[in-house]
Length: 242
Image (cartoon, rainbow, N blue to C red):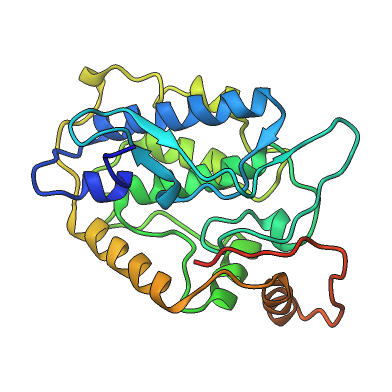
């Protein structure tokens, strides 16, 4: 996979980023995640750094880094305490069972950033970020979404949904009107790349000051914003941050 990270590719000066391109990339992400879900596998660490371009000229992408992936067995609840705070779903923070739609929350956040260059849930600290996730505290930034279609915003809202029973599955998302849009239906106007570049710069800075942490760090952060005093002794042993 020689094309580098997707977000870096679309922020290049020589790349024309419109909603049309965003639909193509999101369609591939949904197809890829849909495939692993049919194998009863959840990725659990979907984030921009794990969406890679196959080469520097084409539009094909691949999902990488299945190190945190798990298989969901029917009738066997799966709980985890790892992930990237900015992209992790509320049920992970609450140490509730994860399902296939846990990945869909992360895809919704990725889609939001792809079209706007703005992160919907990121706070100044991990505690603030996870508080935003837990309360589902987000909206559509006025500047970032001024030129984005209502269909796109509707799909994002279906994925960044706190209620796992209402959150859309991969199968539902691939049938959404925005994902099924033909190129001529979408606005050809170029999207703002400066916000995306600023976002990438922030993510790179975070990587220089954060390392892979023990799960106790996430448990402590969880307790800090939920007011919990109990420790989670049975959770897995890694957290990826940022």
